[in-house]
Image 1 (tube, rainbow, N blue to C red):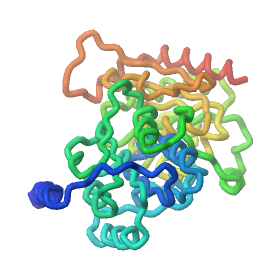
Image 2 (spheres, one colour):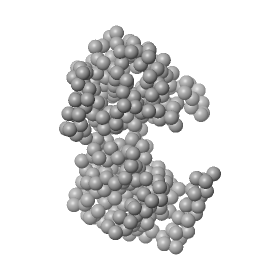
Image 3 (tube, rainbow, N blue to C red):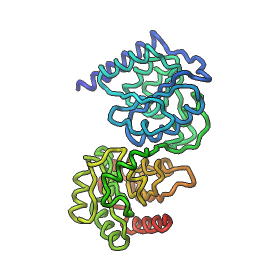
Length: 361
């Protein structure tokens, strides 16, 4: 109830402010001095925005480019070589006032709002309302606070959408490829931590996604069947990954298949990226880790629910190594359920894995 009240009050206050002090769509700088990019939502969204950030940096080479990312999800921006500085975003009023104080003193001449939480729009408005470029495909509700609202109509691809927004803001034409560069010291650290097996050929099985989109997860019993088949046919070790929300699923797989190495809830995002960089293959459903696998050029077998078209999320780069298996239901029903993904059979996944590992030799 309280959160709903705050949401309504904030929206109405912003409407009033926009009438009193409307943003003016002045010409954007051709060569910006300071660019602030907001990219504050999940892992996948941060990776979708990474190509747009590169576009902005190449289009404004003399600019300092700062990314404001959620304080618990800064790893993607920290591993993008086009980013000069990362500042944390938090939803608390104190954290937002700190950001406002900093950027009102050193005001960016270009503010680009990509995949964000709603709280970002008023903040971007106050920082420099006449230089705000927003990605309205992801949220049209606060478009009135933007001097330059951009809606992309000719594509639904998750990487191309924010890239077109960046190009509107003066960004260069770049390949629509997600960016995440694993660091040398991270490779050394992961080799030291997992010295017992890291030099042995291994594959990574991501055990699930977040709780909100649970219906995109493949059934645990299917994973168990697949792991047993895999262990009988391949010498690779099987590494299970996932967050703390996937522990129950990962532990159930480990109980049935004790030969796996269960790292669910035990690695940071940066460590997971490093493991994927060295892995022979990743098996995953439509999760942020899937996009991380694409970004670090790991061969990927990915399983998609029919509500999430693979063509809108898989790499456009022809050199990318992946097999996408799309759920196909003759009578799709809403809302989606946890049983849906059982429609992708173990045999389909076995065939995809065998083909991928054969091609990766």
